[in-house]
Length: 266
Image (cartoon, rainbow, N blue to C red; front, side, top):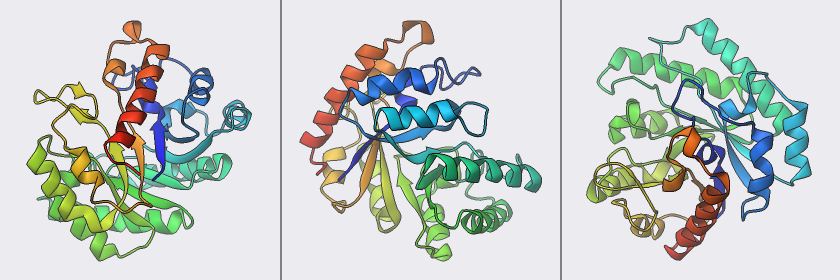
């Protein structure tokens, strides 16, 4: 099983209006010196420009492969108009072609309620448009809380009904407790194409992979060996921008990669 690194793990400004505190080219050298070669790219790291020759050249220089575009395109019809959606898709299509992304991560309607049947129908139609718009790209719907994925049955049924070989689920727990995360995993398992790896303490603060409430060892024992996964966050990296230590964070990233393999990720 291949283990990717998400560049969001190296961005302490991720949840602030600033979004990024350093350029992607500033962190690629540190990534290249680690155990990772395949990346999931936090979309704000690509800058406001649609494409960047400097970033593309850096990928080549460090022999790094940008495989997944972790996009923030908002598919919620209450937030994004059809014209804004199309404009966003044009940017995404250009980035995929330029950088060579094979997959895109999307939130399944951030802010949408699974009980909103009318909104859910619009989401499905928009998802079909995205599939047509990106005919060679695999689309991964992240099971993120605060979206249609709050109800595992709803998001599973959407993917099952769509029945597209290019649309699957990117599993991340929406319930941060052992039994809830396992129930979610078992329900979604037939449609899971990728994993986002993080763990939490009971108070929802971030934990090391082997220490938190999510029983990743049990999950790893039930996934196919050809499934890939991304290390998304490490605890030391969850801090204010001024306290962030890139070298220390990379050390914890590498330690976590060893831990993940020890937990059974093959």
